[in-house]
Image 1 (tube, helix red, strand yellow):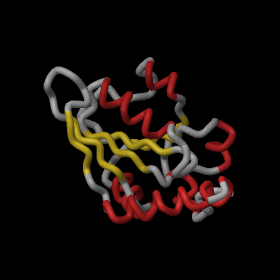
Image 2 (cartoon, helix red, strand yellow; image 1 turned 30 degrees about the vertical axis):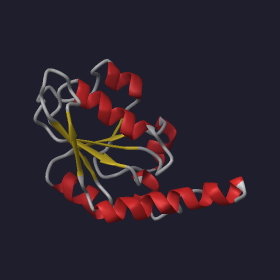
Image 3 (cartoon, one colour; image 1 turned 120 degrees about the horizontal axis):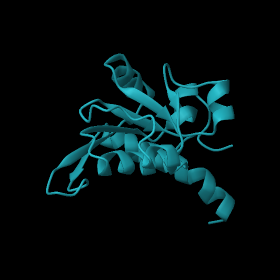
Image 4 (cartoon, helix red, strand yellow; image 1 turned 180 degrees about the vertical axis):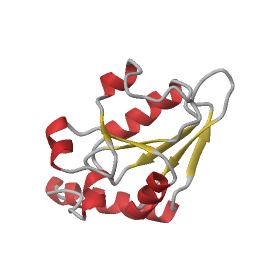
Length: 141
């Protein structure tokens, strides 16, 4: 199959897979110290909206210019470097934190979720559809 077709099919297949999982939780020894931390994958924009309504702090991992043009309600602009240094994350490790990037092919939100888990946050949410799913844009241009 030509590479261009694969690039177009991959995000579609990923979204089908995520929809089939329907917000499954990935569990394991993510934070070290024998503690089990859950990362919840949010398959739909509706799930992300529900979590924001319930108090989750959303972090937009796209560059600041993209964030300034539009973002999820109340989302904070952040970089992976900020998060690695603990900048912008709440002091309360029980606070729900949600990470998203541009879309299904943007790895930054998953990386951010792993950083939060390693920092000891206990309710970490990952919205792989990101801004594209939220705003109704195609997964890939």
